[in-house]
Length: 233
Image (cartoon, rainbow, N blue to C red):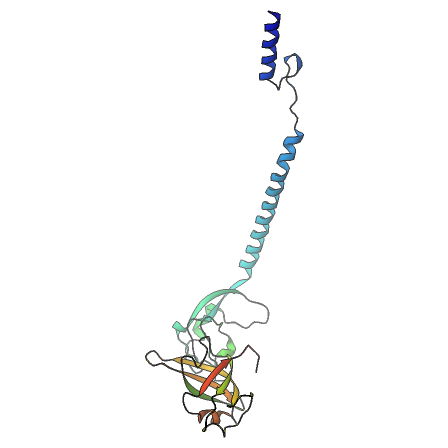
Protein backbone atom coordinates (compact mmCIF):
# COMPACT_ATOMS: atom_id res chain seq x y z
CA UNK A 1 0.00 0.00 0.00
CA UNK A 2 2.78 2.43 0.79
CA UNK A 3 4.41 1.89 -2.61
CA UNK A 4 1.13 2.35 -4.40
CA UNK A 5 0.40 5.51 -2.43
CA UNK A 6 3.82 6.95 -3.28
CA UNK A 7 3.37 6.26 -7.01
CA UNK A 8 -0.03 7.89 -6.95
CA UNK A 9 1.32 10.90 -5.14
CA UNK A 10 4.18 11.23 -7.64
CA UNK A 11 1.75 11.04 -10.57
CA UNK A 12 -0.44 13.70 -9.03
CA UNK A 13 2.50 16.03 -8.54
CA UNK A 14 3.61 15.48 -12.15
CA UNK A 15 0.15 16.35 -13.40
CA UNK A 16 0.27 19.67 -11.59
CA UNK A 17 3.90 20.53 -12.01
CA UNK A 18 3.17 24.20 -11.31
CA UNK A 19 2.39 23.30 -7.68
CA UNK A 20 5.19 23.69 -5.20
CA UNK A 21 6.03 21.52 -2.30
CA UNK A 22 3.23 20.70 0.11
CA UNK A 23 0.70 21.38 -2.68
CA UNK A 24 1.12 25.16 -2.60
CA UNK A 25 1.18 27.39 -5.71
CA UNK A 26 4.65 28.13 -6.98
CA UNK A 27 5.70 31.28 -8.88
CA UNK A 28 6.03 30.69 -12.66
CA UNK A 29 9.33 32.04 -14.08
CA UNK A 30 8.64 35.11 -16.27
CA UNK A 31 12.11 35.98 -17.59
CA UNK A 32 11.86 33.77 -20.66
CA UNK A 33 8.33 34.94 -21.43
CA UNK A 34 9.38 38.60 -21.17
CA UNK A 35 12.29 38.00 -23.53
CA UNK A 36 9.92 36.48 -26.08
CA UNK A 37 7.57 39.49 -25.94
CA UNK A 38 10.28 42.16 -26.28
CA UNK A 39 10.72 41.90 -30.10
CA UNK A 40 6.95 42.13 -30.59
CA UNK A 41 6.82 45.25 -28.44
CA UNK A 42 9.61 46.87 -30.45
CA UNK A 43 7.85 46.11 -33.73
CA UNK A 44 4.63 47.60 -32.37
CA UNK A 45 6.38 50.79 -31.27
CA UNK A 46 8.06 51.09 -34.68
CA UNK A 47 4.74 50.71 -36.49
CA UNK A 48 3.19 53.43 -34.34
CA UNK A 49 6.07 55.81 -35.12
CA UNK A 50 5.81 55.13 -38.87
CA UNK A 51 2.05 55.64 -38.90
CA UNK A 52 2.26 58.89 -36.97
CA UNK A 53 5.06 60.18 -39.22
CA UNK A 54 3.11 59.28 -42.36
CA UNK A 55 0.00 61.01 -41.09
CA UNK A 56 1.95 64.17 -40.31
CA UNK A 57 3.61 64.14 -43.74
CA UNK A 58 0.28 63.63 -45.52
CA UNK A 59 -1.35 66.45 -43.56
CA UNK A 60 1.51 68.84 -44.35
CA UNK A 61 1.45 67.92 -48.06
CA UNK A 62 -2.30 68.32 -48.32
CA UNK A 63 -2.11 71.68 -46.60
CA UNK A 64 0.46 73.02 -49.11
CA UNK A 65 -1.36 71.87 -52.28
CA UNK A 66 -3.21 74.40 -54.41
CA UNK A 67 -5.53 74.14 -57.40
CA UNK A 68 -4.09 75.59 -60.61
CA UNK A 69 -4.81 75.48 -64.34
CA UNK A 70 -3.07 73.04 -66.67
CA UNK A 71 -3.34 72.33 -70.38
CA UNK A 72 -5.79 69.52 -71.17
CA UNK A 73 -4.81 69.07 -74.84
CA UNK A 74 -1.93 70.30 -77.02
CA UNK A 75 -2.23 73.95 -78.07
CA UNK A 76 -0.05 75.86 -80.51
CA UNK A 77 1.12 79.44 -80.47
CA UNK A 78 -1.64 81.83 -81.50
CA UNK A 79 -4.43 79.45 -80.48
CA UNK A 80 -7.28 81.20 -78.67
CA UNK A 81 -7.76 79.43 -75.37
CA UNK A 82 -11.08 77.61 -74.87
CA UNK A 83 -12.66 75.95 -71.87
CA UNK A 84 -11.87 72.48 -73.26
CA UNK A 85 -8.19 73.43 -73.45
CA UNK A 86 -7.69 73.68 -69.67
CA UNK A 87 -8.42 71.62 -66.59
CA UNK A 88 -7.80 71.85 -62.86
CA UNK A 89 -4.92 70.09 -61.09
CA UNK A 90 -3.70 70.14 -57.49
CA UNK A 91 0.03 70.59 -56.98
CA UNK A 92 2.52 71.71 -54.36
CA UNK A 93 3.86 74.98 -55.75
CA UNK A 94 7.41 75.98 -54.91
CA UNK A 95 8.33 79.59 -54.26
CA UNK A 96 8.94 81.54 -57.46
CA UNK A 97 6.89 79.23 -59.74
CA UNK A 98 4.32 81.23 -61.68
CA UNK A 99 0.91 79.56 -62.01
CA UNK A 100 -2.70 80.59 -62.59
CA UNK A 101 -5.20 79.65 -59.83
CA UNK A 102 -8.06 77.46 -60.97
CA UNK A 103 -10.66 79.97 -59.80
CA UNK A 104 -9.28 82.47 -62.36
CA UNK A 105 -10.10 80.33 -65.40
CA UNK A 106 -12.54 82.94 -66.65
CA UNK A 107 -9.77 85.52 -66.98
CA UNK A 108 -7.68 83.41 -69.41
CA UNK A 109 -10.36 82.07 -71.75
CA UNK A 110 -10.42 83.86 -75.08
CA UNK A 111 -6.77 84.90 -74.88
CA UNK A 112 -4.20 83.79 -77.49
CA UNK A 113 -1.33 81.49 -76.63
CA UNK A 114 2.09 83.09 -76.71
CA UNK A 115 3.81 79.69 -76.80
CA UNK A 116 2.97 76.11 -77.71
CA UNK A 117 2.23 73.79 -74.81
CA UNK A 118 1.64 70.06 -74.56
CA UNK A 119 -1.08 68.32 -72.55
CA UNK A 120 -0.29 68.34 -68.84
CA UNK A 121 1.84 71.51 -68.92
CA UNK A 122 1.00 74.14 -66.31
CA UNK A 123 -0.57 77.31 -67.65
CA UNK A 124 1.44 80.39 -66.68
CA UNK A 125 0.87 84.12 -67.20
CA UNK A 126 3.83 84.17 -69.58
CA UNK A 127 2.28 81.56 -71.87
CA UNK A 128 -0.59 83.92 -72.75
CA UNK A 129 -0.55 87.06 -74.85
CA UNK A 130 1.15 88.17 -78.06
CA UNK A 131 3.20 85.54 -79.81
CA UNK A 132 6.80 85.25 -78.67
CA UNK A 133 7.61 83.08 -81.68
CA UNK A 134 9.72 83.69 -83.65
CA UNK A 135 12.13 85.37 -81.30
CA UNK A 136 14.34 88.23 -82.42
CA UNK A 137 16.82 87.04 -85.04
CA UNK A 138 14.90 83.80 -85.55
CA UNK A 139 12.51 82.48 -88.18
CA UNK A 140 10.01 79.62 -88.27
CA UNK A 141 10.03 77.16 -91.15
CA UNK A 142 7.74 74.17 -91.69
CA UNK A 143 8.90 70.77 -92.91
CA UNK A 144 6.74 67.84 -93.95
CA UNK A 145 8.16 64.57 -92.63
CA UNK A 146 7.09 60.97 -92.81
CA UNK A 147 7.33 58.23 -90.20
CA UNK A 148 10.94 57.40 -89.51
CA UNK A 149 12.22 60.90 -90.27
CA UNK A 150 11.59 62.24 -86.77
CA UNK A 151 11.30 60.78 -83.24
CA UNK A 152 7.80 59.90 -82.08
CA UNK A 153 8.56 61.68 -78.78
CA UNK A 154 8.90 65.03 -80.57
CA UNK A 155 6.92 67.81 -78.87
CA UNK A 156 6.92 71.62 -79.03
CA UNK A 157 9.93 73.06 -77.22
CA UNK A 158 12.22 70.12 -77.99
CA UNK A 159 15.71 71.00 -79.25
CA UNK A 160 16.57 69.19 -82.47
CA UNK A 161 19.28 68.89 -85.06
CA UNK A 162 18.11 69.18 -88.67
CA UNK A 163 20.07 66.72 -90.79
CA UNK A 164 19.89 67.04 -94.58
CA UNK A 165 20.84 64.07 -96.71
CA UNK A 166 23.61 64.86 -99.16
CA UNK A 167 22.65 65.16 -102.83
CA UNK A 168 23.51 67.22 -105.86
CA UNK A 169 20.87 69.78 -104.89
CA UNK A 170 22.20 70.24 -101.34
CA UNK A 171 25.93 70.52 -101.96
CA UNK A 172 25.65 74.31 -102.21
CA UNK A 173 23.73 74.70 -98.95
CA UNK A 174 25.63 76.22 -96.02
CA UNK A 175 26.76 73.76 -93.34
CA UNK A 176 26.35 75.30 -89.92
CA UNK A 177 27.12 72.26 -87.78
CA UNK A 178 28.15 68.63 -88.18
CA UNK A 179 30.78 66.59 -89.92
CA UNK A 180 28.66 64.58 -92.35
CA UNK A 181 28.29 65.06 -96.09
CA UNK A 182 25.02 67.00 -95.78
CA UNK A 183 24.38 70.22 -93.88
CA UNK A 184 23.01 70.19 -90.33
CA UNK A 185 21.34 73.00 -88.40
CA UNK A 186 20.20 73.39 -84.78
CA UNK A 187 16.54 74.27 -84.28
CA UNK A 188 13.69 74.21 -81.76
CA UNK A 189 10.32 72.59 -82.41
CA UNK A 190 7.46 75.10 -82.11
CA UNK A 191 4.58 72.98 -83.40
CA UNK A 192 3.67 69.44 -84.46
CA UNK A 193 0.62 68.78 -86.66
CA UNK A 194 0.02 65.11 -87.22
CA UNK A 195 -2.27 64.42 -90.18
CA UNK A 196 -4.98 61.84 -89.52
CA UNK A 197 -5.36 60.49 -93.05
CA UNK A 198 -1.98 61.48 -94.50
CA UNK A 199 1.35 59.93 -93.61
CA UNK A 200 3.04 63.33 -93.58
CA UNK A 201 3.49 65.22 -90.30
CA UNK A 202 4.09 68.97 -90.50
CA UNK A 203 6.65 70.19 -87.96
CA UNK A 204 7.39 73.87 -87.35
CA UNK A 205 11.00 74.68 -86.51
CA UNK A 206 12.45 77.88 -85.09
CA UNK A 207 16.00 78.51 -86.27
CA UNK A 208 18.33 81.40 -87.11
CA UNK A 209 16.94 83.68 -89.81
CA UNK A 210 20.07 83.20 -91.92
CA UNK A 211 19.61 79.43 -92.25
CA UNK A 212 15.81 79.14 -92.40
CA UNK A 213 15.60 79.93 -96.15
CA UNK A 214 18.21 77.26 -96.87
CA UNK A 215 16.11 74.62 -95.11
CA UNK A 216 13.01 75.75 -96.97
CA UNK A 217 14.79 75.04 -100.29
CA UNK A 218 15.65 71.42 -99.36
CA UNK A 219 13.61 68.97 -101.46
CA UNK A 220 11.02 66.85 -99.67
CA UNK A 221 12.23 63.56 -98.25
CA UNK A 222 15.80 64.69 -97.56
CA UNK A 223 15.31 66.04 -94.02
CA UNK A 224 15.60 64.07 -90.79
CA UNK A 225 15.25 65.45 -87.25
CA UNK A 226 17.41 64.28 -84.37
CA UNK A 227 16.04 65.17 -80.92
CA UNK A 228 18.66 66.42 -78.48
CA UNK A 229 18.77 66.51 -74.70
CA UNK A 230 17.42 69.69 -73.08
CA UNK A 231 19.91 72.52 -73.37
CA UNK A 232 22.11 70.64 -75.86
CA UNK A 233 22.88 72.30 -79.17
